[in-house]
Image 1 (tube, one colour):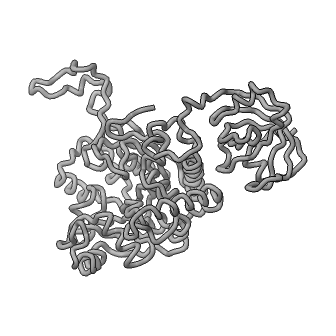
Image 2: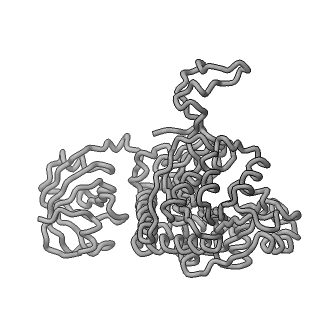
Image 3: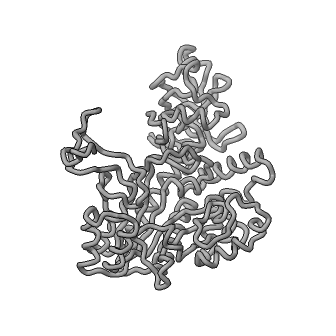
Length: 477
């Protein structure tokens, strides 16, 4: 007897074999047809029971959400909608599901409602598809780097440094409520705290990854990061996962090559291995787009967007060239942009990035050589003294997907930049050491994993692509 899962059974399609299967009831109709799903695929398998010879008590317990075990024969289906089905000979109820209380009934639920039931939402088609795609994407990330000679580095979650200089960090302390010791000038005395200094949850593993790149050559991090930004938008989470490769002896051009090759590789992987889930999500997005006003609809479906990224060469454009294009664009001249483009040096917004990708170049874009005053201290200063060797990869429908840079490898220049930005040299003495002992050109980038999952699945809200979202006023589950 074959003990299998739904995905394998549907793939093999070998009829007249005996099947043993466990899963959850999606629907039960006419006291006869069970749509069974075990999470291995978005597709259900139809199980047909002989209701005349099944006890009434058992029939009553076959409800949406119930866990059951069945035995039977795989046969060609007599009805429409499926090619094969299981003719059930034995059925056992493993776990009941009270239909009056079970919230995930076979009907359309709002995403808000499903977020309130995040422990059960993965039992819906949409969320099971999203989470299988997330899993495959995660594997593809590791596969790409491992296949290309990178070493996986686990950088610390608790850190004393603020890599981004944003200051929006979660503090880590062992002090009891309202009992923190203070210094003579009334400030909290962190020397008496657990780590002997002020510590936070990390916003990035980049600085620590650089130390490993300067010994192992090619490294990457892939782990949780945290930002205490009080932002209730569809693009922000307080806890999210970051992918951060760092490579010694690689300049900005190499960094742009790596980011393009990496993105195309992982998207190709899911296009190959998540066909059913992506087809479903593509269809879901098409239906969702129909309910929007014409002006807000996307020109591309989900699969079109993925192929758009995979099949096109990324256009490389300097910030200055992009600024000129935007300043002279129709939307800017007609004051259609929410944020007008007037003076060189402004930070580009999502609307500008999307215009460059979707309307002007019609392909993914890599912008490089940004103004130094809108970028982080560790980015290499160009000879013009006003731009840095930064790069952002821009996608359709989303704007910035990747942010990276060639790092400042010159000790004196880095010290000057840190002074100008009021960054304490004593806190980052070890980071400066890398520039004193065998310094070399090196580069890397950061990619927010949830943003990549959001792009790949077509989900409109980033809270719907992580199992249990952490956002302001919400740490449920």
